[in-house]
Image 1: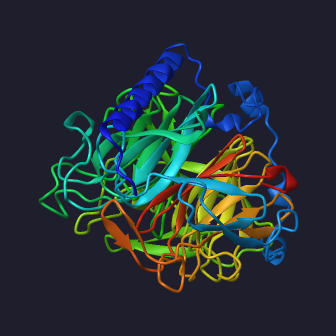
Image 2: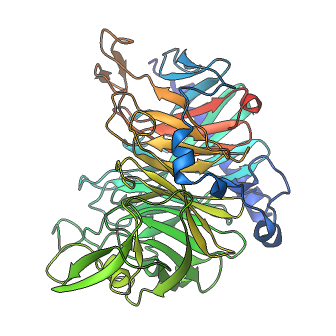
Length: 510
């Protein structure tokens, strides 16, 4: 990679400053659009419109029917083949004909604040849009104690190296697609996923409950959510009332301001946080865990007592749907049960008969419905997709993977402008993929990881003083998010990379 001269660096930094000023002014005028416009300008502009939205009919599929409708590739988009990156010329992804992409933010690339791009790219979303410029926030799922990569005022725990970076994508800016990046918060642990908010921010989630009880190197308790704004300096303040547990992702209902949360453990809860002031989670609220109106099918022993609860990850009938109730979590800031290092929050729900997922991971709001991913759920343990209807208070199984060759442990998910879901795999297959899941129950691979840097692949490459010469095709996709004609996604490999993908979306379901 060529080294920039000082003049180029100054020009790049000036452009970065100009972009930030422009977006800050737009934010002050309340002109930034949130993520869920999804190219439907004005469709979901208000709480009334969002509350009135009618869900796409995933519920008619039934788990058995959806499971049977797998196809090797989309008949509309066509088969996958290597496509060369517009930024580097490398064949990093396999995509259908007509699609192209730009890579950006490789691990080690120097950002506009002078900080090297952290590794372990994970959850991400577009959190604001203005005048053709998109602001994204990207997680970095780092769990070490090598120290914060951000400035002290952006740091939660100085010992820890996880955090987030903010990116600006400006496809009309002098022909360059990616325009800017900077550190936004750090000093956190394992920022896995999160979710965009209607107030132009990203809630980043720590997938841990580590603290002084697990490592004296830490200076604070971990296991919290953090609200990271699109523009302006973030405040690394733990949202304690949202719970202290192994957070995975969140989805906000724009009609109510209620925040839904998943937990990456087994058993894991599906939670909702009812804020005291919608749009201001730092001002506190009430945490609850979902309970299904159904007879228990499992038990868990807590402090020597056996408690019955419902495990959604076992064999379920086609079209399974349950009525939903919610139980209060009286101590949301309880990271562990006495004598252990985990389980203080989920156990409060289990003790009240609440329901459990098997590794609750991706969650996304789409057209009035909250879609929830159980990464290890189902008879085969290869993943389930559920739909929670907050108006009718129902929870339905809409897809279950029976074979890892069809879908291998979905993790991050996102709603597409055409009403389908995009699913990121986090399994054990040799090649990791993103899949489309359509409203009529068809599932197909849309994109494959083609990052094989061995001699028999594309060959080794050197970047930022590091040589990459290993097969990374099995590394997971993460952080998929749609906006207008773009799909943004990360590959959490060595190196981590962010991609912007575009093409003939109108030919198919995504």
